[in-house]
Image (cartoon, rainbow, N blue to C red; front, top):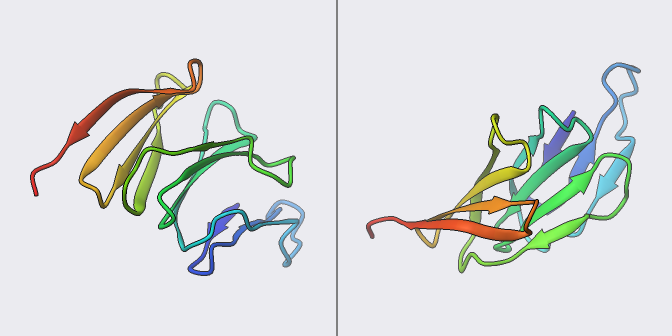
Length: 116
């Protein structure tokens, strides 16, 4: 299980082992982490979105992020994996944009701008 918190910390717990303390504490975000999502096809990978405006790609077996995605001008409120294409995710931000990103190309495939 992965949790996000207002102090910018992400904790990974091993619920199967019944250990009450986190097995890993990740603290690269500089502001509140608002969203975390496991990749259901690549089960060691997860995303985090933060009020620092970044999305980070993580491996549950590494103490540092694999990649940081920039591009939002405001807080990232939500991240979600594409369930059909496991190397693609979306992020939604307070800058009124939704970005679709491909891990295969490490670039944004599309940006949708909302109405303000």
